[in-house]
Amino acid sequence: MFKALLITAAATALAAPTSVQLETRQQPGAPFQQQLTGWNEGAVSNFPIHSSCNSTQRAQIAAGLNETILLAEHAKEHVLRWGNSSELYQKYFGELPPFQVIGAFDLVVSGDKGGVLFRCDDPDNNCHQDGWAGHWRGDNATAETVICDLSYETRRWLNSMCGLGYNIAEGATNTFWASDLLHRLYHMPAFGYGHIEHVVETYDDVIEFAKNNTETNVHDSDVLQYFALDAYAYDIAVPGVGCPGEVSSSESSESATTSSATPSASQASTQTSSAPAECHTHDDGVVHCS
Image (tube, rainbow, N blue to C red; front, side, top):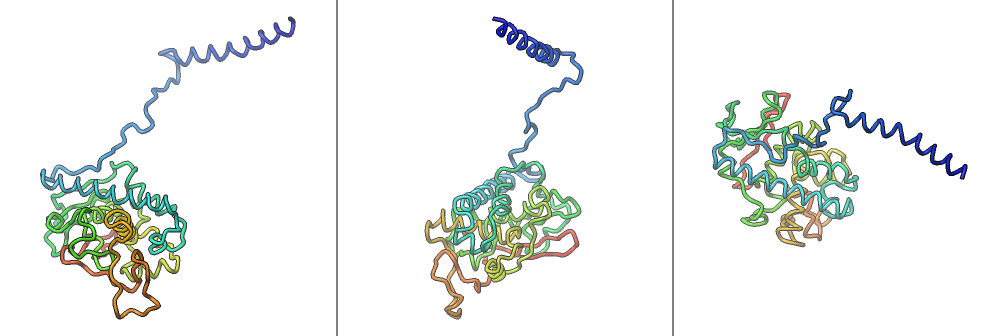
């Protein structure tokens, strides 16, 4: 009985401060009271499109961005499923760990969309230049990119993947709205963070660097585009076949591959007639055309 009383008294003593504390916190005028808000309040789920874009331009840019998410999401899912054991992964990234690759794609899929702006009014007066289908504004406005008229005339949709003579090795990375806008997103700090850049210049280099496990491949814009396109072609568009491109008859047997999903490193990237050269100005003033 005595022990029971002690336990009851101790429990009461412990409970009292807690009750008082809870009551204090719940009082409307309590000092240091905090108004709790949702942890993700203010998050932006859709990419902003500038008012300078008319309804037709807006519709195409929005549809293109939706396909960009679709392309990036499948690339991420492919890596999550197979890691760096996938032949497609090894083709572009060698045996490097997949963390950066997954993150680069998931940021586009799941990241906040509010840190960028797509516009159509060409405030820097670049769209008149031959071959300019769009450009990142660089120092003028690092969070903005301009979509020029040439994009609406030449870009293709993912449902035409592997059609009209397109293949990964010989096609331009900006043939499709999805891959072109992926590239544009990585230019802007909200998605590229200055870490995803243009390092590799040719398809030959992409494949050769992967063989050497060159770490720049996991944060190179062109490599990420090539991988996403190749994974989509092989897994989705034409399952188990894709459209990697034909190995040239002039290639040596040593460089040729027997896998239909793994084209030779010697296949040079060329522009298709439907995809213009992509030009934009970097922070240092250098004009890059892919």
